Amino acid sequence: MNFENLNTDDFSSTDSAIYHYLMSNYANAASMRVREIATASHTSASSVMRFIRKLGFNSYPEFIGFLKQSIHQPPAENELDFREQVVESLQADQFSMNLQENLMVLADKIINSDQIVFIGIGISGIMCEYAARRLATLGINSFAVTDPYYPLALRLHNTTDNLLITISNSGQTPDLLEMMAYYQPLQDFQMVTITGNGESSLAKMSHLVLSHQYTKPRKYGFYDNSTQIPTMFIIESLLRILEKYPEVSGMDSADF
Image 1 (cartoon, rainbow, N blue to C red):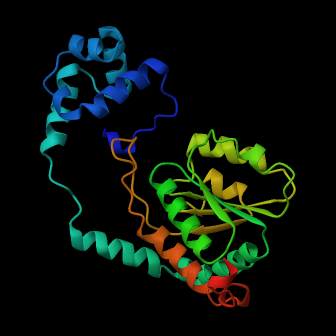
Image 2 (cartoon, rainbow, N blue to C red):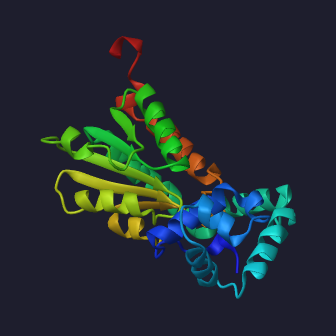
């Protein structure tokens, strides 16, 4: 068993409290007793033991042994492996065949939309801010939303031709799915997803999906540890296409 493939969706609030404490104090926890972890996570010793058994460990010493081994375990992936995997993901037959066509479709949608909203959380949110800023420099009305509780519906009230572009490597972020589910049945909203999981729930909700093939499990099941190179490649490729549109290329400094 390891934390990288851990599914946290079915954790109770007590499980989450223990889990988040362990993830924030990973190295120190390896030398702590059950009661110390319970006190630090504001739970009980019995709750900690139930959580450890839920992870698949038979005893507390077995769990501590796993933590100590994980701390000293060398990375399994070297720099060459990383480069090869990213390059292979960008050169995959399905990716390369569909990407150009989907980028052209997305570029048309952007040109014909009144408002473009990039939506993402965490590192994906940073990619959204970058993409929105780059589109804005081309004179395209765009902005980024990185907070799933942002009152976007109020901001877009009585607007038409809205294009929502979500960026999510997993395509399974609960807060993002809940947010986008509101817009799925509405008119005047088209949804596009840039993701590393073309079969994800978010992809299935979208009208257009740009999916790359490089994915990596979350660090300890919680922290996003994936590279954003494929996403950045898609964004930059889209910008190159948009720059050739007469609506964009015909603009000069006097238009701003």
